[in-house]
Length: 132
Image 1 (cartoon, one colour):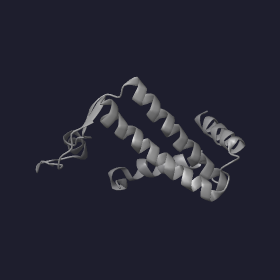
Image 2 (cartoon, one colour; image 1 turned 45 degrees about the horizontal axis):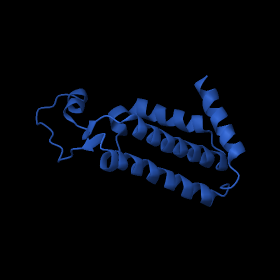
Image 3 (cartoon, one colour; image 1 turned 180 degrees about the vertical axis):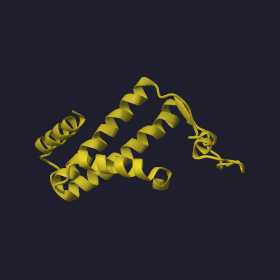
Image 4 (cartoon, helix red, strand yellow; image 1 turned 90 degrees about the vertical axis):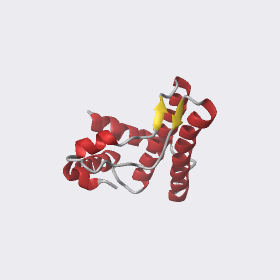
């Protein structure tokens, strides 16, 4: 069922994408979308203040016996929770990012669900060795 939703989304993107059909337009819109997601997250910190960032050098204790223990020691540096307004903006911007990702898949004759599934398989199979 989920693959059908993904395929249908990709089909809708293909039907709607008229003005920015060139691969160059799609690549630039995809890049712009990434920037807009980043900007929306930054604005949630600097403009709204619903979240804050408290970052410092990562300190890894010497006696870590497992990857699970390591994950518990690491911090994402984010404090607070997104307010509904910031969440709406970020979700909207991430939606555009998905839209242009699907558009790029269409242009390159790739199936978005297959791309997702391939990445899922790599992440699942390689586990911690897939870290980038």
